[in-house]
Image (cartoon, rainbow, N blue to C red; front, side, top):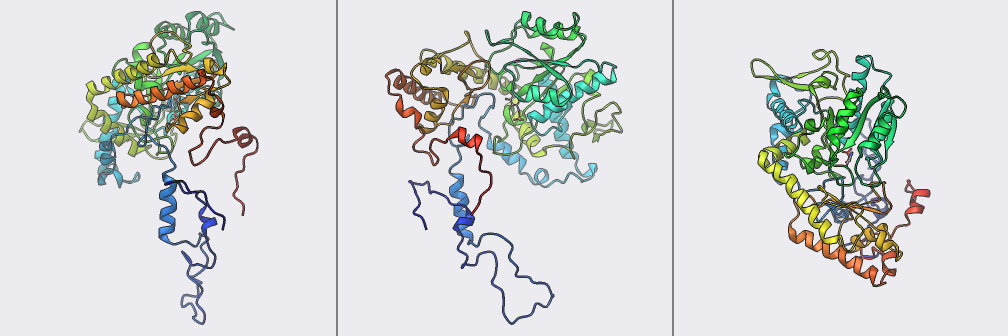
Length: 496
Ligand SMILES: *Cc1c(COP(=O)(O)O)cnc(C)c1O
């Protein structure tokens, strides 16, 4: 047995298979000799699991769980991900017997409470976005993008506009945007935003009218607002009008809705269809913590084409699910059953406990917190775009790079100092970006601690104390990984 490297509560953890001692029995019982099986079936075969006792297995998994860094553990400033506190009230609601143990094949007559909850959630989302056609089915943000872009494609086809093939997308867009457009059979035309971090009317027009003076080939645009540089697209109204004149639809990636929920309605800046990451904006554990949900919200015009099912209220005030038979123009089903019901319960619980005024305050506080960090760090780090940010702020490693310390080193230093790093090298518009999203749930004390840590890193680099940054983290269970080797030579199978 090799001596393991334990540090404080961190044990160097072997795989369960490696812990096994074949001479012990754990889950398999030894074969009995001289006793014939009365069923004629060998009941004591090997079931193929490691031979360990219950306490050995429990300790293994509990110790492993302490290796995770989570939002319940500390500050998690991962930009564009909205990692905020998930109130326990939501969990309590999701665990109510009638919600937790419902079965999707139950009759509508025995599922009225669940259907009412979904109907209420559709209404809240419709009200908050100004887009009243809501389909809850998609399972995540990226799935919502697929649902929304399929809706646009389907609408163009039904309206005899199948020749519309081009989707406009800014270079700062999340990778799922162009990927979704391509998956739907569209062609992506990229709009550059590098200089100001925002879409300019000139660059937009240049892309809109590139091959045809009226933009006849334009199917739509995919824009995140606020965008992934943390900036509100101030020209968005003019851009959406130009797009609509050309007969295109505006798909809004709603992942950053946390910055504007309760403050601005996407329909009012021209959005035709948008997904909502319930797990980001409306507080469900995500990012390895559980399933997400990405409902889409559409204009009345597009609602007929969106996927099914949709919950409706009948004249007798009961609720039912509308499917293909009730909605002949629909593009059909995206998945089995009704979607991630447990997330719907959490989202509605969150909305109702916050109330309309509380949701508005969420975005105000999220924006305030991000601007506080931006203002405190703007002398220490390069700030590429002037002015206030929305719910996340963008910095780059330009100043530190001169001393040989890059964004990756800064991220690893944060791990060493007890933080989850911010989003790094995204958006791709500039070199060495760091995207910091504190969210509204962090206290000033938590923000100040993070700011001091970031300032200390900058001071060390400025004073030439740089070498240590290339070997951080030192105190985590895993130290600096060779990421190039991991990418080039991935070892995906465990072998004895
Ligand atoms: C998170 C995110 C997505 C994808 O959402 P998932 O729920 O992770 O699939 C898309 N766009 C942006 C801007 C995001 O931040």
